[in-house]
Length: 247
Image 1: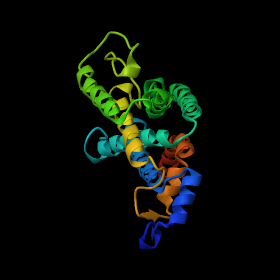
Image 2: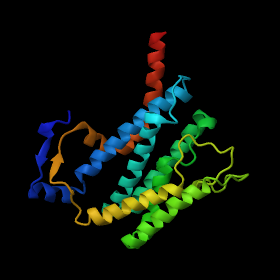
Image 3: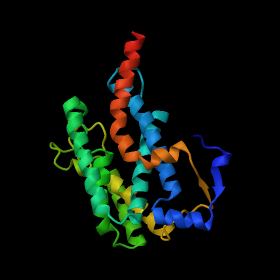
């Protein structure tokens, strides 16, 4: 399946009604798919550098941009999705549980590359906080999100001798987490997503007059969690297989 002119169609009233009933909004799936594809690319580069020793830099330029763009998209879309979901507690607990499995698996694979508070940890905690955040009006949410973002710029200069506050972005020089999205400043981005959800999706349907149908990116976006859970082992063992074939 490809994205082409044939996949762009005017969205009828009936399609909008079906969209509302299904609880899915096409652009959220689409941009979630974009985020996952970018993250998979970043993880390929990351693995080539840190696991297989290739001379690739993922800390700057396009490679770094793909990683941060992917994370930012996931977080904003999660904030939006919370305003559309009817069971955020269940979703948050499920994601946090899977995140803990990733923590265990990565530490067993290589303790020096263990993930202590990655994007799934962040999303699980943030979604659990949503019932409290959703009680605030949009102006207060914008103010809170901005304050958290400003705090993020301030606390990054703070270094402690311990890591008890690592979920808030305050760590020691010895702290290591292969994937790291602390609540400060990233909760600010999540809150901005809540604002977008409240403002743009209060009627629970697409903000666009057209829809992109039957494309691989939207399909990926509808299956993000399962693909996210399995993509790293697949990438690692695929690279190992390629290296073995090359001899």
